[in-house]
Length: 180
Image (cartoon, helix red, strand yellow):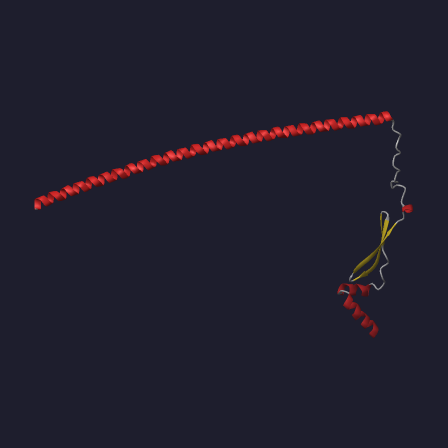
């Protein structure tokens, strides 16, 4: 009895509570389950708290069903005549020439496109420069007009101050003459 209790205590340390309860009810070990997947068998070996283990058995090639496709041998080369080889060489040369012509055509198109892009960029640059110059000239003219107007206003104020100063001097001289 004591050995049974100590065995259950050790088992309790290893297994979870649910596994312990299940092992109490099902004392018979589970039979090894075998699953078939095409040309292999999978056997479940032991279940433990740490994980499971499986054995995978592959069937030998002789056991394969006749439904599976058999590997065929590569097709045998037929004898090629000199005339056929000459035709192939001429066709290859023709393909090479057409491919070379296509590459040259693409290069010419690319160069033409580059020229167009360069011309367009130069034209846009010239337009931008011209517009910037016109804008700058307009601003300079406007600034010049504003400056001239400001200077004219300053001159007018200075002239008015001089007139006022002359009038004040005249009035002062008249007072001095009258008082003196």
